[in-house]
Length: 542
Image 1 (cartoon, rainbow, N blue to C red):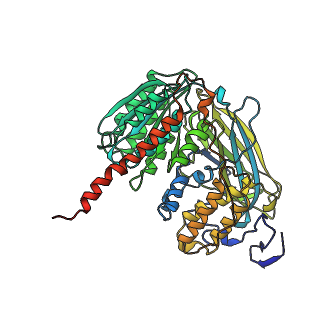
Image 2: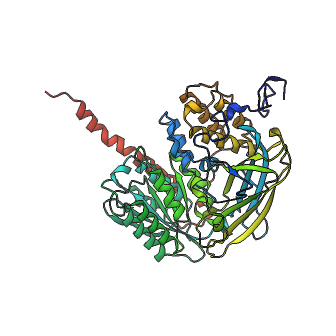
Image 3: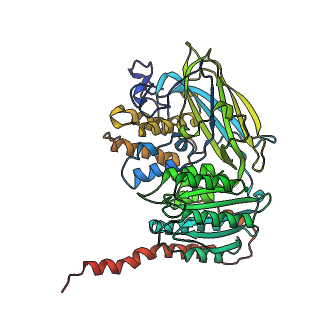
């Protein structure tokens, strides 16, 4: 690792080691210079008084892509209240071991030093959902509910492109419908076989924006179509594409949540795809997806649309386990205090763990879920079984939960002995907490330590998403007044994944590239149509 260049009270060294070595962090990684009671950080819990901690898993990723948009396009730090640590961490896939047997989920745990407080330990818990082969994917009954109100006019070309990516994957056994809503709701595409791609793309191409938003009426219509074409044993899902600016009809937040909770009982699940700018309603989007047994992603460009609707189509659309809850019980002999990092709006009462009437999160095919606990040792060591972990889940069409148990042991591993998944997730969690902390409370080189930890733990990065994260940390540091010397990272993303549509039989001989060509041309029409108006406005009056 090289020779020590400095030593801090934390006992860790700042190292100048060989390329690719794991950096040793100092307390400067701590967002507030102190690990306890910092602004934006969750309160520590006494393990003797409350040894159990219970929460619902979360697979949403909207907070991360919103943060990326703010830093990359807006050249601004995201609002602290919109930064959710669990959505930041779970944006990345950590490739945990595949489940075995008849249980669709595997549980992995790892314990190592806490980078932002070296006197603490960090517990990393990973859940892996079983992958499903493309040819074994159930038939899909999808209803796309598209917001075409005036506030969505700038986003509509991206919505059309996103659904074009989805269309390319559909086969003859799948159906898709398209419902739009603005001042009123209507069906622009009745249930249509996925093989009729030219018909679907033509319907999308005819969409235009204008008017106010009656989201409640649109949701009613979309669920009715999904229920009328319900596929037993298949995927039945409503996919909402909107900026969440509901301003006509069912407008109250509570009323919207009640509506979604009622509709999920039909067996039709919900996905929420967020689009939009300054008026975007992030909180509304997340809550609707959570209550609709679904997931939430923010689409900030074509690359993210492909990630969500092509590359991760299984985890986005195919639910393999619902109402997934985790409960851990710490050993007070080893743990004095603990805190769950993130999941602030996912906490449950301990009695809810075994209550099958309590709603919780869903896991899609191939999805990974990660949770982190920061632990303060009760003595000089934590080696041994820190906690017992229980995980409950239901089958997608089931009402009774099944229980999986696992013991979480601390072997005393040093930071350089932990996995890339452990270190990278710790860096993302640390970054999220820095973003949620006032800049005056962040040490000057705190983001440098986070950047170096993430860069050294990139591991396999075929889509360059981890390399992008490193650049985002550097951008945030510059906006906070400390410009970092860029890391010497080189990353070339793999080719776009082969589209899943080719795995299905298709009765439509129309080349897919023509559909993409039409969509790309249509996306250029709004600025071209605005050009004459711009010229007229600049002409001088005679």
